[in-house]
Image 1 (cartoon, one colour):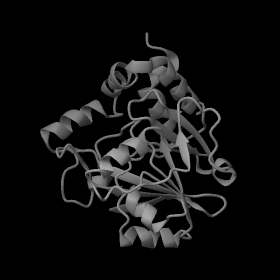
Image 2 (tube, one colour):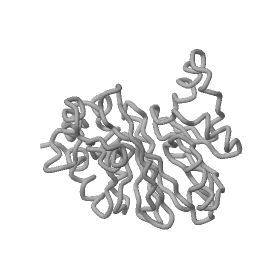
Image 3 (cartoon, helix red, strand yellow):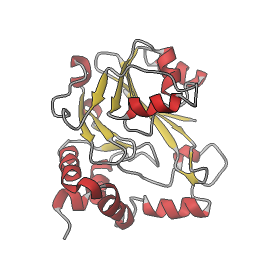
Image 4 (cartoon, one colour):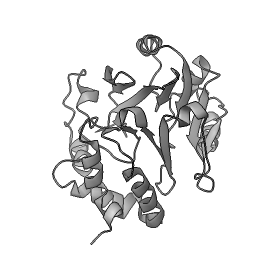
Length: 261
């Protein structure tokens, strides 16, 4: 695990992770210390002693835990056991998915989500006064994974799960002794989910794949996110984009922001 303080209030926990047992995606949790001193954790990774020590060094008051889409919830049960009074955040459909999984996997436990983002009510959803003082958020319900994207205003940082990738996962594999780009499947998918050059393949995947079912709704969400004044992006998969996040976002989502010619 690589623990990095992107700023005094934003910490990333970067780990190796294989998708389908072949593709080097990498994984990443983000810890944000709110103005109030409370901690918010996004896409939690394994709650190891090292992670617990880092949380304590940041004040230890874990008040919010977010599963930002239907996929990034694997370690929620452990975090819920450790922080049962935290405010848990998820997209619609995750509670049902976990309930089904719990029938065959006893490690998946029941969690009450205090905030559930829904397509119907997303414009009215509020999390709490202390959280909302520091964050904007958008539910990209048009994405198949039901992405919730968070903008931490004090440090101009966008936090997202699967909306945008930045492969290869160099930092996430930096302590494994492995090349983050090795393997034919990783090379292929890394080419499709890169922000380098014109990012044409990631643009095509978003346009023809992820947004196909509801492109107008997808475009509305992307345009709202694009209106925020972020400079940095923390993705779950691939390297963080520090200082150049807005430019890379505008490149990757150009067709959704401006219309495809």
